[in-house]
Image (cartoon, rainbow, N blue to C red; front, side, top):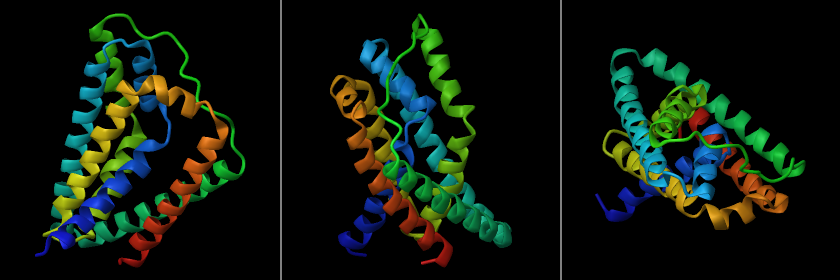
Length: 207
């Protein structure tokens, strides 16, 4: 198999991973806030990244097993994932057309490395959106690439997580200006909308 054939799924995984993780939520806002405060940034970035790697690997392996023992369930998961992606894309398009403003990374950070670490873990593992994004959507998209290429897709998605959390944590000072500008979010949400709608249609059509 050629290198180009292997890089295709990896790049798709990278783009899909970034599209799913970039949306600002509680976890990302916490990582950004810790970066702005320069408090236990390495701990937070490492915990969030490793957690994502575990979830992505488990989703790829788990959906592959389900495909063998319960193909009807995989079909249902594929349609559910497609519906989620299409809905996510429409919401991103709505945000691009009617922006609500930039992100303000405010609020007091929990004192002490232990409490910061527990907060980072809770925002990752107790967040239901993580399981929808990572386990349902990423697992379905990965296994749609086929047995030989699904782990290349997963490698791209894992790279996206590491890059994003690292950028949020250690590049927070510069990123704050970007997040504070509503026009930047309009461009970002517009790009996310296109990518998510395309991925949703791809998953629904089984291509």
